[in-house]
Image (cartoon, rainbow, N blue to C red; front, side, top):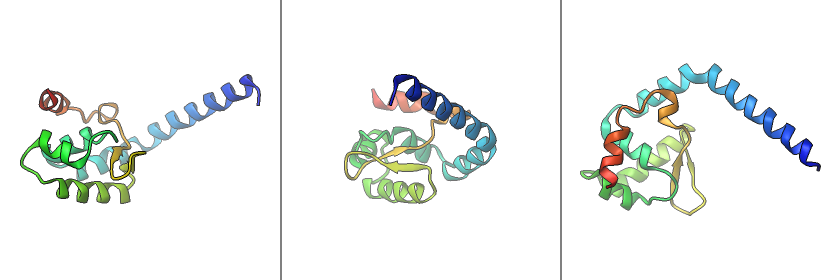
Amino acid sequence: MSAIYNEKIVKLLTELLELYKIVNKPTITQRLQEELADTKRQQIYKLSDGEKSSRDIAKIVGGISHKTIIVYWNQWAQKGLMFPAQRAGRYRHAVDLEEYGLDTFCDDVEQLQT
């Protein structure tokens, strides 16, 4: 395939993604608010970047077991809010919370990681 053809495909996919986000933003926002009802869940979701293990996240957040994090991951994956990462046994969030205006706790997460 030519480079021009590839560029067109990327451009179309980018446009489709943007339209999808616009059309589905209210639904996605509502689902996130329901699932991430407390600060700990929000922190766990934000920290689930596919790189950190459930044990890593449990240490960062504190007051929650790594087994509970795995339960959350599985629940969120079933609802399309999380995907298995390339590294086995780890998950990554499907949605950037900042993009949906749900980043009120992001500063807290960044402080926890230091």
